[in-house]
Image 1: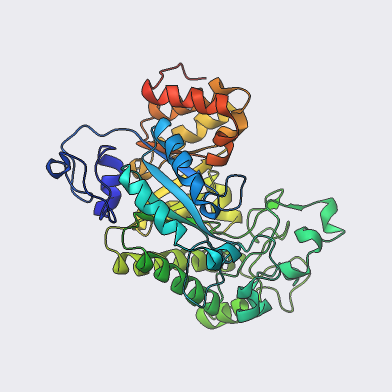
Image 2 (image 1 turned 90 degrees about the vertical axis):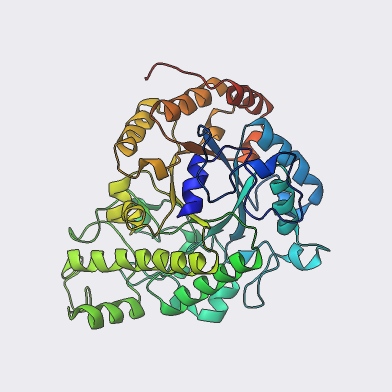
Length: 422
């Protein structure tokens, strides 16, 4: 936890832990090292999400690294969240059991390692961003070949997500429901899935001993629109009904099967069943946390989470507030992507009242304001007014493609505004 505290408390020009092959800047020996408390007044932190498969694709071209770091410095960034695992593929030279993006094996150097060293040279922390349970729309993912189709989530009707046409609900369900984010999702109740993911992320943090953090994304069940409050009302659609999950549930709880032999739409012992499914995701987070903190004491474990806490808990098996409270998670980043400033403020004020608010950095959808940069500036001001120690901007791709927005937020980083609450 010491490094997590420093993420929130250290000044931005503190040298990141174990900067690789980089000499400390002049005077750095007088500063507190990462993991030690800073005597200086804490500065507001700022993170930047960096996509693996967006428009910039910084890991595919070394020439794009310095422009990225220039943008980050202009924005006053302190932390880079670099996507290195998406759709079941690694965008770095991972262990042989992990599928790699094609360019990785063709590259003459470890491009993520090079970016890590270059970022550290500019006193920027780097977090490896991984999409945990999402395989995107990759039916050909090696994980499915290795673990079998039972690795993929099954809905309450007994359909695997592999059977969904165009990765969305089949008819007639599609008339009433739609997938929130289309794609394939792994079943966190599958022991084989858990072990593969844990091994993948252990390898990642051990491969990069200078890495500052591991950032979990898509650590939840998929969402269906409109949301349903779990299974207990017998309405809507939810996931996690695979054979292995239901067998484990019966064995561990002594309860009958939640759906086998039940009337259509009925889920037996629904509260117990929902609690058990939610616990599968929590246990995966806890296991990853134990693994990476054992391998790398002081590493920051963070997660991008759904900002609607009740929906996350009831509908998506994502009890991220409990992850913070238990210490499994060092930092939560709720993705408050909205143009509605009042809704934005309401959510901030909710989080600001929590005991763990100092370990929350709101995620801001600045891409929504590419044509109205002043609105993005206003949301950032609200983050500060509510006392949060930092925020994370989505995303570098959006800012690289919107020079006016980048310029406005760069000026804002020099003189943080104070505005009236909406």
